[in-house]
Length: 174
Image (cartoon, rainbow, N blue to C red; front, top):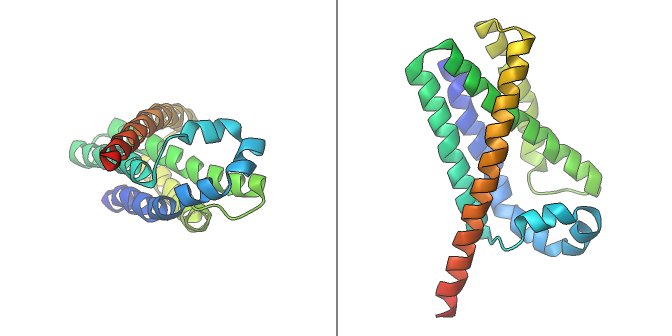
């Protein structure tokens, strides 16, 4: 179980490096497309700089590390299931990026690593399911819990990133 747990932060870092490097420049270049096809997505990221986005991703990494450490230290089935719920949410997030790319009909920063990480993540979920011998109701419940935690934290992380972006902009104006 230890190996699978540590693969979560590693996959997260690998995937999110692509996002940090390319996401904000891509958004700035494709504002018209986003305004037409995904105005809510554009509004959600409005006022976010690359540095602010990187801070948001860093905050998310801290949460991933905490979930992983608690599962490792606790050695309890419920903690493994909570970790698995977070990992399922991450895996679904990879699928969302692939669907976004299809929706926009072009490459988006995060597509390459999503295509690499998705099969690996599905394999990890399969292996962990054999180890934990959970039933499908448990997987569903903990996946919903993981998605709720990730969704709430995403809003918190983006808010933090936007505040940092504003702070940086004020510091540059002085």
